[in-house]
Length: 165
Image (cartoon, rainbow, N blue to C red; front, top):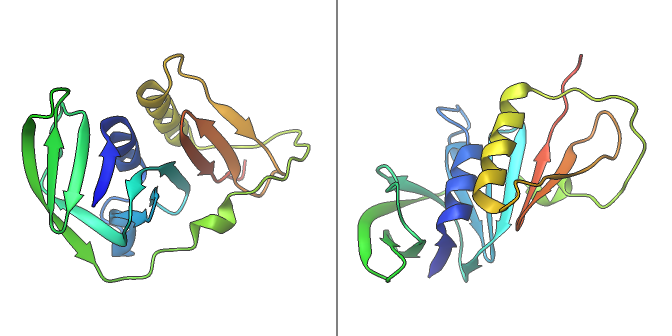
């Protein structure tokens, strides 16, 4: 069984790829107590309640208002504040190998004089901050100008890859 809060699930959906030839990036990776989503340029990781490891895809559009998503087998139930089921969706499990996201997350801190980012990825960070932090705070940890920048927003850790300027 997998339990994901609405804020974490909606945030993760912002980071997965869309129509990528690497089909597994169009999905969400459940790595036991962690949900991961990436498009290859920006990676989202957040804690969840789960005892499973698999790559999933929802068969349909997520409901707009829900409090929690509980996935059991190939069915996702979306509940509200009063634990009423507001929607049910099928869940497809993909047989693939997901990229090793753990190598992106570092604790090294370095000095950086300048670094470039894509503006649309910064917008995604803003949307995530609205969902996960009451005051919309983001903490950036820089290693150098060529490695990914670690961004902490609420319970989520995000790695944003820099671009050449």
